[in-house]
Each structure stands twice: as C-alpha cells, then as structure tokens.
Length: 128
Length: 128
Length: 128
Image 1 (tube, rainbow over the protein chains, first blue to last red):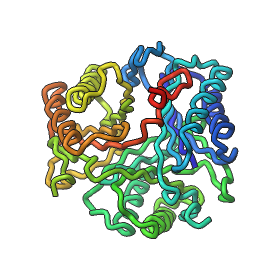
Image 2: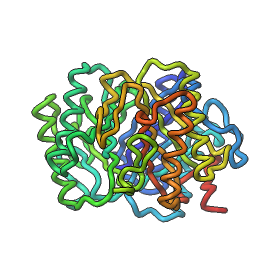
Image 3: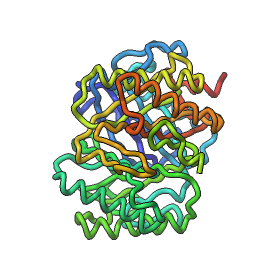
C-alpha cells in the first residue's frame, strides 16, 4: 500500500538504487508494520540542474548525494510511528548503501484506505 | 482537475502510451463524471531496476507490464464511485492497449477544491 | 517544507529550468512566507507524447510550453493565501523565464506537519 517515489542525482549504479529501494522498504516493514510483500516503488535519477535542494535548511548539511523519498500511504499512523519510520530509514540507509543521514529527505502523503486498487480493477482495501 | 501520473517499464511505443492515457481519462469521464476536456497527464517510463513491484501482493499475479496510475483529484467522491472508477479503468485498458487487469495499480490522492490553478494565475475552482 | 515537482516538455535549457525553479520558489516565499532556504524541487522534462494537456479547459488557451507544478506542503494556509500564491507565481514566471500565464498549471497537496524529515532521521516539525 505504500507507493514510494525516490528521487536522486544521476550517476548511481542499479545496485546502489536497489539498496536504496530495499532499505526504504525495510524501514516501512520494521517501523510501521507494512507487510513485506506490499512493495511498490519508482526510482528516478535527475541531472544536477533538475534536483534542487538547500544546502543547510534547518541546520542539516546536505550534499549532492541527497535522496528525496515521498511515501503515499493510508491514513492512521500515529506521530510516534512516523518518527520511528524516519529514524529507522536513516539508520538502515546509512548501513547500506551508505547514505549519510543528512542526505535523506522524507515526506509522507496520507490518503484514505478506499483510495487504492492493487489489480483486477478491485478496491481491495474497501472490501476487507 | 485530475492530475494523472502514469509510470511504466521502459520499452513501449508512443501509441501504447497514448492508449493508456486515453483509457485512464475515459475511465475518469465515464465512472466519475470528470469533464472530457479536463485532462492533464504525465507519463514516464522507467528501467527495470527502477520500477519495483511485488509479484503477488494480495494474491494478484503481476508482470513486467505493470502500470502504476496515481490520480490527484478534488475531494468528495463516494467510495462506490471510486470502486466504479477502478473497475472501469481495468476494463477499458484491457480492451486497449490490452493491459492485463492484474497489471493495473491505482492510487488516488484527494485535495481541496481551492488547491488548483488552471492557468492565468487564477484559482478557478475557488471562484465558481 | 514544500516539496515541489515541476513537469514540462523536453527541449529547454538548464537556464530556463533554473529560472522556473527560482520563480516557483520566489512565489512561495513572497506569497505564503515559506523560508527562503526551505527549497526542495525536482524538475523533469517529458516527450510530447508523455505530457498531455487540454488545449482550452476552462477557457484557458494552452501551448506546448505548458508547465505543471505540483506542490506538497503542510496544512494550514487560508484560501486567500493560495489565491495569492497562484497569482504571484504566474506574474513572476511571466517576467522570467517568460512563461505565458496560460501555460502555468498548479496543484497543491497538503499534508500534516508531522509528515516530514529534513535529514538525520529526525521529524523536525514534530519537535518544534
């Protein structure tokens, strides 16, 4: 159910991006109990001119390796769960693929449970 | 008013993608009465490593031809309208361009009516 | 805190896209008091077949130079602030890089203040 978008600077290897996708998903599983097989992600690389970030907003020193993660998920997680998600994601991605904690930016969009179809034209979460 | 994002695996023809865009829009028109000329879409193709999906979450068997559709639209549709939208979209896309029903994933983001400008710097839906 | 996506037709220069990004951000700063250093944007170009828009929905005459801006920001702006944002953005982009007012389409997604991490695995807006 989370639909995850990952944006980063062009020039990384598929292995690097796979580790990013794996790590973001593992954080969702560990921190807020997303089912392990509930994984849908799109990763895109962008030229330097097209991926713009402030070097120190809120006192965080960022670099060209910055990664923006935008997660669309259903409503209902408590603030403390979101806090845990951000923390766990930074820890996991620091381990692999070695992303500095300063270079992880996350935003979450919440939508209704009824707003998803996972195939077959069905609204799976509306019926269960 | 819907702003539609379509994500799919690289390697399709412009004609295939046009049929996808046409079908998604026709489903919006038929199922939830979006005006026929209220059409704004961005389609993007992604390498295999960058478009990640689970092969069988919720028992749906997916393939490399998977298409993610993310629709941003204004609030107010009833659950049954959304259910109809998902069903109609799967039917139409199966007909053309021949997308398997298992390979259509849809999510909907709802926003306020006041949150749109369709040109001229105006907030058209705020004023009418 | 706003996370800004900008979509346009392929074929522009980095300078043109920089002016777009600069102008969108300046409008956020001037119209709704976003901090000048709170800037995070991803710009992407798309082939003609993949960027689809209606030529005259709501009576606005659009061209191939159309730009879609999607802003994700925290909740709480009043309708009149959003109106001012759309108006200011059209004015600024008309000046530089010379975008016709008809060719600016904006949508806003609002999310909770707790839904952001700006680095270090922290939920900065939750704690202040």
